[in-house]
Length: 164
Image 1 (spheres, rainbow, N blue to C red):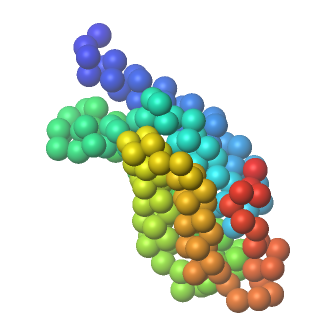
Image 2 (cartoon, helix red, strand yellow):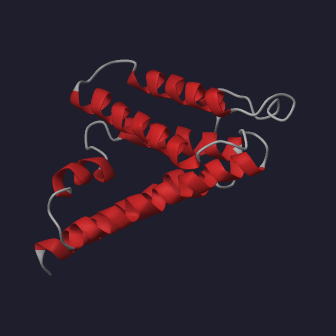
Image 3 (cartoon, rainbow, N blue to C red):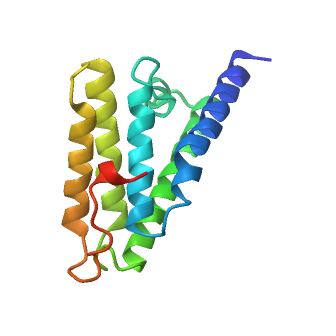
């Protein structure tokens, strides 16, 4: 096969492993904030494990952002699928009453995704200690901004570190 086919096969394999390690275990959590927290925590763990090799979603986006073609399309499709799953978890958190009804799910997704990009940059490129803790703290701040007023949120309030 061609180099392009090999790159797409690698991206597909990465996506399958990402789903196995991050997505599938997290969706077993209770709908709403517990699931959203689990998705974020597992994503953080995945990025922290990939410090030496890098996250294909992130490094691939940098490499292929201005190179149209099947590799970019495959990569973008998988990133969109992951973002769609995260946005759904945010919407389910709103529906469950854990997050305010006026929460802009796309804005919250943007903010959470930004934390992962910053984590990857600081941990992998700059090799800064404490990047994982800062990402978790940032997630807790984002969630606290969107939290529903008491008593609906009482059961949902747990720091990101507690998510499984």
